[in-house]
Length: 235
Image 1 (cartoon, helix red, strand yellow):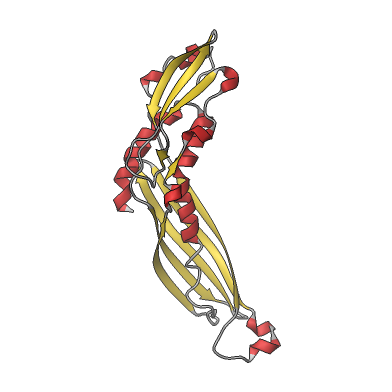
Image 2 (cartoon, rainbow, N blue to C red):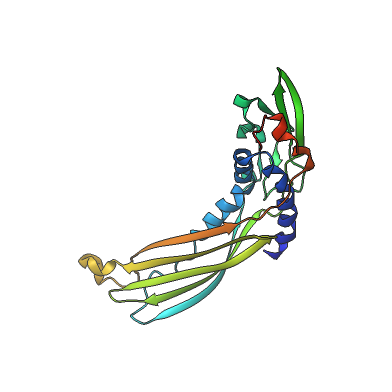
C-alpha cells in the first residue's frame, strides 16, 4: 500500500475542489472515483476465511497472516462524468462536461474531464467556476493485509476472527476492517456421508465491518461568490 499513498494523497488534495460544488455532486463524483477500490476490496474480502474445510477440534487454533491483492479490471478504471447528472437544473445551475472520460482512482495518471458550472441569470448561462476532475493513481490493484485467527469449538465448529489495521491513504484518510465468522461441519449430520473418508463437508459464514475516513480541506477562491450569485443558496 505504500506504493499508492503518495499518489492518493495528491488526488485527494485535488478532490477538495469537488467539495465546493455541493454535497450531492461531491458524493456522486467521490463514488465514481473511488468505487473500483471499494469493489476490489469486496473481492479480496470474499477470500481467506478458511485454510481447510475441516474445523479445528475443541481448543485447537491457527493464526494466519495473509496479503490479498485484487486486480481492478480496465472497465472500472474510467468513468464519464456526463452520466452523473451533476448540477441543479431546477435552480438554474448547469454543468458542461468537456472531454470523453475521467480516470477513477485506479485509472491512468491522465487529467480528468473539465467541469464548467454555469448559473442561469436572466436566461443567460454565466460561467461561475471550472476545474478538472482528478487524475488516477496508475495503481490498478487493491491490497489488503489480513490477520486471521481460528479457534475450535464443540460439535465440529470453529470460530474465526479477522482484522486488517487502518491503512493510511493520505492526510487523514484511512481504511480498515474487522470481521467474525463461523465454520460448522455438516457431514456429521448426514448418515450416508458420515463414514466416508478423504473429504470434509462444512458450511462457512462470516460478517465483515469495513470503516473508512477521508479528511479534505480545500476551498478554491473561484467559488467564494457563488452564494451571492445563487441568492444565498451557498454550495
